[in-house]
Image 1 (tube, one colour):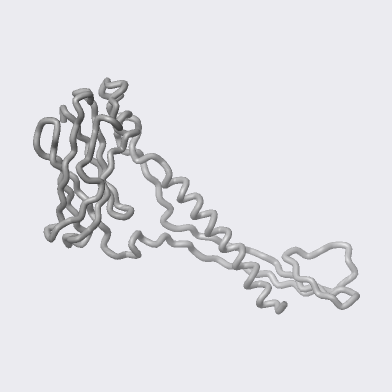
Image 2 (cartoon, one colour; image 1 turned 60 degrees about the vertical axis):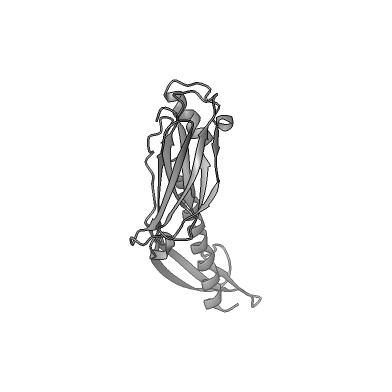
Length: 214
């Protein structure tokens, strides 16, 4: 193997390993719950960049039987001749903005009406101010967060899963970037229960707290 190929392959392995570790670290940071037990936003952390510097010593060794070995560290106690090359490589890993710098979706969720059935309205645009027509939006009831919020409101067993129903779980926005569906609250759902509804377009998500008393 040529010296250059050996150096390139070794450095590639090290740099890819750093990148993989950086990705795992960000995934751990991103796994934090967006809301605490009381529905308050948790602090979110991002790694915008990572500077690195690699110092290494390459030793090219010719042994008595004519074979050559490529090492990062010079061996001791051997009868051989060697040449050493010491180098330093520095660089920076930079986080690519979501969407690779393109405008990102912006989703808004609102409710209207009173009583056991309300109307949910989804509005979709992007960060450039353009309306998103024909966008597919997923709607869900976050049962775990709803139960936590209800418990904070004094409702220990709200029965969210059985007491809340969405008219449609997936809606498509019209030419004005809007879509509507219904949300129904069952008779057994406590008056003070808090229901957290989410609307998603790709990785963009928004949340709305609603309920019979809200």
